[in-house]
Image (cartoon, rainbow, N blue to C red):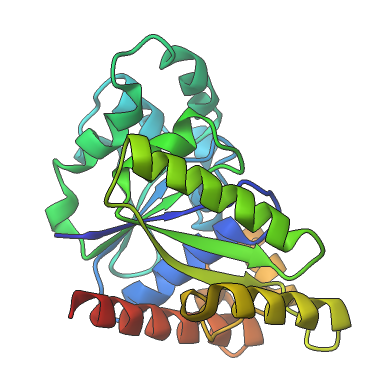
Length: 258
């Protein structure tokens, strides 16, 4: 049975898609069979893996709305072992089209059942809002990975997200857990960043990964070349941090399975 992990934060610009793409790539390089499902109508995970969203015939939108088969929509990527279920702006229409569908919150969960055995890990890259697409991801997932930017108001946004996760647990997915919290855009020279990191660690303790993701220009450049940073510049601090995160993620998973 695959790990199904939603990468979520209701706040935008926290490195959510960067984390989804590069952690997925890092785990594939560790020999895992990984699927990344792009649930964001912006399609940044799709373009970040070198897929032109404008040229796509079938996307996750068609899978959820038109029940297109997985093999018709899935895309191979440049990273061996990493597959992508892509998205484009069509997915924005799903927010409206799903309104009157019965059990609309469970569409993604039901869809994933057909092929989850093909993968070790499935990541769901959520949009930065708690709409029907994010709710679908949280209902389908077994755990949530939360990227948190080391800046002012980080704790406030994190508290709101955890409140949303608890509501999903109570009503739609009682087995949902928090996989962990990843501190992103961390600048050790910045006093506020250090204070935020210390505050998050003090409050959430073992849920916070030891690996922090630095503020790094290479991480910002890689998506414009349609490549994970691990292929764009393996020697960069950003790439090395995501390799470390992938190893720590696997270690967390092994401890949870015991």
